[in-house]
Every structure is written in C-alpha cells, then in structure tokens.
Picture 1 (spheres, rainbow, N blue to C red):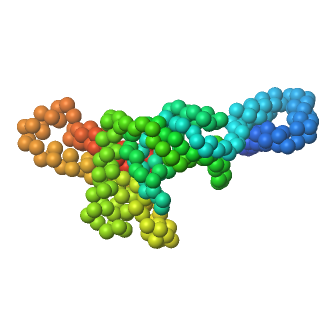
Picture 2 (cartoon, one colour):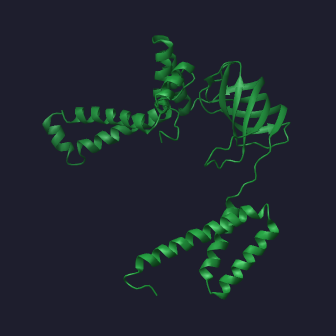
Picture 3 (cartoon, one colour):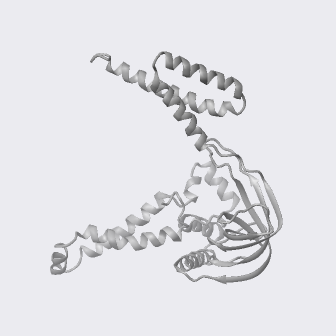
Length: 297
C-alpha cells in the first residue's frame, strides 16, 4: 500500500503500467496480422504470468486495448474504375475552375452500371462546363477510385473518388436557402474578378469566400515561402475578425439610441447581449458564404 511520502511514485507506476499495457494490447493486434503464432504464444504467456501474479487489471487492460484496436481497424479499400457509370446526384458546392475546365463536389444519390456501390458518398466531378451549385441531375460519367496518400496521423483508408462528366441526361436546380447562399458566393467572386486585378481578385476570393481557384501559382509560392500560406484559407481568425466587426457595429449603434429607449431595453437585455444576438444571422450567413469549412466552424 502506498504511503503518504511515496504517493507520487505509486501514481507514476500506475500510469506507466497503464500506458505499457495499452501499448502492448494495440501492438499485439497489428503484429498479429504478420506473426499470428508468435503473438498468440506471447499473449498466452503474458496472461498466464499475470494470473499467477494476480495482476487481473493488467490482463483486462491488454484485452481491452486489443479489442479497441480491432474496432478501429479498417481494411484499405482497393482502387476501382467504372468507365460508363450512370449516376444520379446533386452539386454540393460551387464549382472551382481547373486547368481543363471545372470541378465540383457531387453527392451520389443512386448509381448504375458500376460494381462498387458509392451511394451517399461525395465525389469530385470534372467537367468542361460549370454546373450550378444545387443542381441535381442524371449524369453519364467515368469514375476512378484511387488510393489516398497516407500522411502521418492519417486514418482514412477509403479511396479518393473522382469522375469525369461525359453526358448530362437531366438537370434541375433546387432553389433552397443553400442555393441562394452559393449564388451569392458566386456573385461575390465574379464581382472581385470584374473590379480588381487577377492577383487581388484571387486573394480576396480566397480570404473572403474560401475559393482558391483564382490564386495564381506565383502567389501560392510567395505565401508558402513567407510562412503565411494559411492566410489563403478561411479559418477561425477570419471568422473571428468578421464577427468582431459586426458585433462592434451593432454595439456602437445600440449604445447611441435615445436614453429612454436604451434604459427600457436594458431591463430585458444588455446592449452587448443584443449585439451578439443581432450578429448571429450575419455570422451564420458568412459561415456558409465561406464554404462552411472545418477551420471556420
């Protein structure tokens, strides 16, 4: 039993055993794929030794870690190809310009003439013409599923799916709230490109709407060399600055209301609280206008 003076040592020992047993369980699972017989004998020996020493918690931790690794393991998907697949889907976001045309994220609703079922998946579809965001239709495409590059800390084992548009059989646009947001986004980018030079328009489009298709290669290199490449993507910094500006404008206006109105209003809510509430619609609109990316959220 740990005394008062050696309590820290006991805590350190417990954490060390916890770490080592978890590491042993997870490592055993992945090594079992390559050395099943040796790992089985090693696990049996560890369990027997722990039973003799009455280290039941150690056995439990190793087994829990082993089955945790099993639950998190996903087989690497094989690449595939469908030359003439018929898909039904809708364009999720605004198309981006490429060297040969446009690319747009498309959510698959249904698919035919393809051995791999990718319904519900989002793919990148390349086309010679631009498809409007929110457009839903039936397309004849050539689909390719390629393996991803496995970078450190990458846990995505599925394939990266892209498609090249061959023919459009039907097309309609759903005019919901997201359609209006994407239309506003496209109009803003078009305004930048019309009123400013190419580099300035590309920079504004990147930091305001998240569209980096107008950023030239030279500008990307310049930002990369200076260590400021992250500024070309809409992040929490951009969102925070915009939110602060909107909040400050509303608070400035509210604090300059006539005194009787301000005095009566403060019985229910403070000027700062009302400014925050009034800012929410603008913040939400800008969130979707910028593409609603993970860094902004």
